[in-house]
Length: 122
Image 1 (cartoon, rainbow, N blue to C red):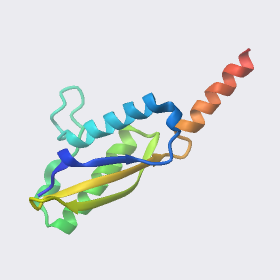
Image 2 (image 1 turned 60 degrees about the vertical axis):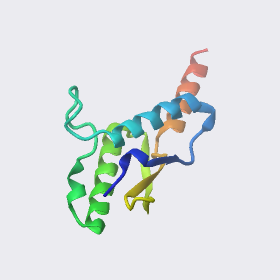
Image 3 (image 1 turned 90 degrees about the horizontal axis):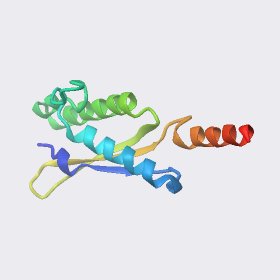
Image 4 (image 1 turned 30 degrees about the vertical axis):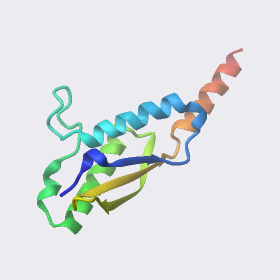
């Protein structure tokens, strides 16, 4: 019903001068979204609960969106989900696209504060 392996993570509104940090976050989010909850030995909560797949499409989309939002807030508080959309693939599976934005007080502001503190020390 859903093809999470083809899901897309779109990151909007970030400071792309910090590309390495963004790549780490994007890679981590893609791993979080493609892992089934309960399969990571070090953290059984890591990943998405797959029970939404047994529900009708409109309910499954809401359960999936709720799970993605909650897990993203928990594991990556520096970002937040702005939008989740679904498109049907050629074989009829729904492919989610998550639009990620910096959270209030997220990546860019903390980096600026660190730079200011270093400048004050000099």
